[in-house]
Image: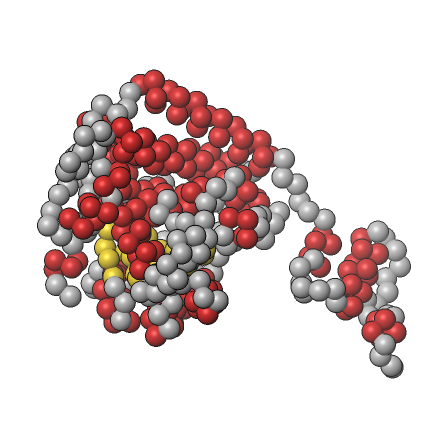
Length: 397
């Protein structure tokens, strides 16, 4: 792979100024609906409305992130993984998804959840410790969070192979053809599960996009200690396209993801996307990043803040003002209050919930164990959970 192929796809720079290069030309054309300065633009207002929508998405997701982190510090959550700094990669890529596409997140994809129409408060039960998930994956085609690093890449690939075999790829019907996305971080690429998923996806030409948010740190291990070359180069070894995008550029993130999803839905197979971004906060609220990275590094990335970049882009085209900012701040305050109220109202479920959803259909042994447990909880005399089980199932002693 050449150095040119390693180049980041970037359409708006950290200063909010548009970036136009020969290599980026195809993506600029694809993202024309978001560009306020594109060729032939006579009325930039429709594009401005779309960019303002992305800015709103990112600002509200960040407010949620700050609110959730504060709730953990107050003892309302057991743990929380902040996404601070990764809003553009998540919102841009998430807004490229169609309703029928299916997402397998890791545990930091709060911005993607927002673009799927989820109430962000529904993400909180797992971090409050009252549920194993907290939402119905089928409601928004957004799977429950996966805490085992990289394992869900295999789940996404298997699901994509099922979509393919169900005839939901390459039909030409935009409302029918579907793609699957696995979101993970740079650290997950060091896991064998991800390599296996890439192999299965490639040889089966599965309609899946592997969206890697390279936030520079796998907890305390830098990307440079995981790979000597850009992570997107891994794609070539598995026989699929690999693209590096500026993950702090929301418009470029949208364009790259839109292309990858189009390829998947049309039967063109998988794509590996490396979104180069930065985790501005801690890995989780139990982590102290000052122990392994410098303030100079953090400051250099803070100057590339993805939200500040979009606002600068809008302001440069007279598409944002203080009144709009005040309205957005009020909306963010409402979201913060909603999340606080919902989290504090979450109570621990009854312990008997452990026996639910063990099997798809009623099962005699589980029912007997549940009855014995509930009797124990009620202070009734202890008895074997298997007593009467043989009679129930028609067995003999």
